[in-house]
Image (cartoon, rainbow, N blue to C red; front, side):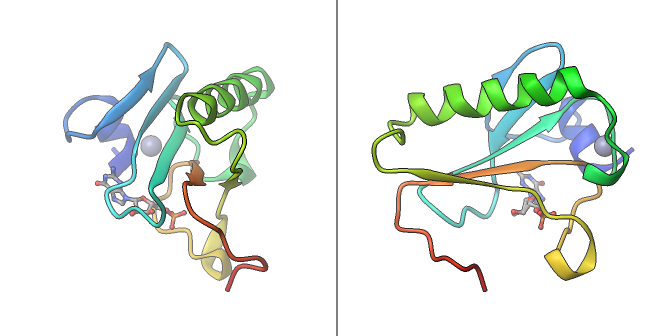
Length: 110
Ligand code: 5GP
Ligand code: ZN
């Protein structure tokens, strides 16, 4: 089972900030901004390349919008990032959306 599937199964602890039947959200263990939440589908897919659940994509975006609102990021702004593969530095082979905010974020990214 992959690392994030183990978090979904509660075999590895995480600071969970949202959970429903399809979606889990938890704080990144190595935060790159004051708010750094990972939002994932519970159904395993290794990356965006093999995720074929359009209805869950909608859920994921609803959850990210809600969390950003709860964190008070609407006015200041926030960023959503998905890494796929080596050049993007994907480290965990389970599709995850990074929700980042609470500081000025550089653009373009390095
Ligand atoms: P990637 O580089 O694959 O897009 O992002 C993986 C993210 O998962 C990284 O930001 C990393 O800090 C986070 N991460 C890795 N292992 C764990 C863990 O065990 N728990 C939590 N909460 N985050 C993790
Ligand atoms: Zn997984």
